Image (cartoon, rainbow, N blue to C red; front, top):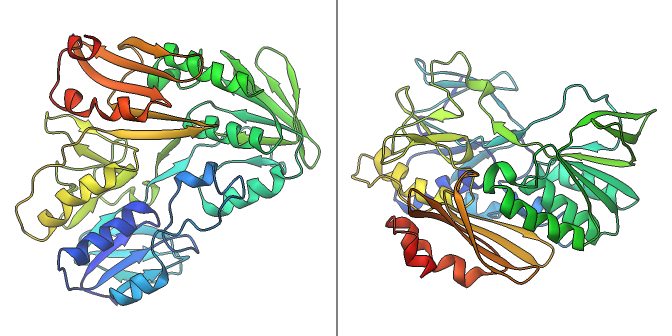
Length: 391
């Protein structure tokens, strides 16, 4: 068994890198170890469906090797955490070794959902890792017809990138519109309009019944019986928290690792941060936020608490964005699909909409309206009446 008597961070993305960095900035001088199942240093994931896929960059590393060396941060690559013994305070790694910890921070993020009924055919892709993005990029370079299954943010971004690469794209979504389950049909229809204007064949309200081919995918059959030619299929039907390795550990799991308002999990000396973590909101309910900007807010609450210092709970207005063609779609707050939506600007491509719940502005979504979106942050944070923004 290897025992380092320090802090072990399991994960290979933004949450792991930012947590290690924040520990050193907070003058924690003990051992820090990052454990990642990937062969790459922690990297940024949002560009995978955009700049990396379109061959605009291959460098998404968050910090160079020198950063980890200079800050005395050990990075174990290609070693998946397979289980944890919270009593012994050890993690079993995929190479059979055990790694001891004083404090464990879980930052494993998400894993993409797959469609188990699909046959094992070349040309069917999911997108979560850098290597998967490179594989999709290589295939897309020779593809003619692609079917993207799922019109969430990843599916929409991949469809936009493939169109820019000259591939004919059919975007299939069982919901009535893209992003309908997140932002509602009204905004989903505006996103549909954007994609159709770029030549994407958007099929909503229909699922996929099967894919076919010999060695490679050749066709996709929809639930309505229509058959689509395809030499490339991308499955983007959502993700789930990467918590399988924690099952049986005694750590409470419910849509992620259940934590208090400072990131403390149910087991002693265990914490969680980022997409995998379900934190208690200051209003008492559990919230798991899958947004890039959320990590910094959580780190500012978790790290001081872990080090025995006073820290405020992580309170922020959730923010995320999605780049599709030349339009940056931005969202502030916690909009829900059944909120009342007020579209206040729409020029046929760009738009701005406020979300109302019980007379309060709870969110804003804009396409190509960055200034107007961001200026609403304080209104959302203070629970202002919807009349304050509609005025």
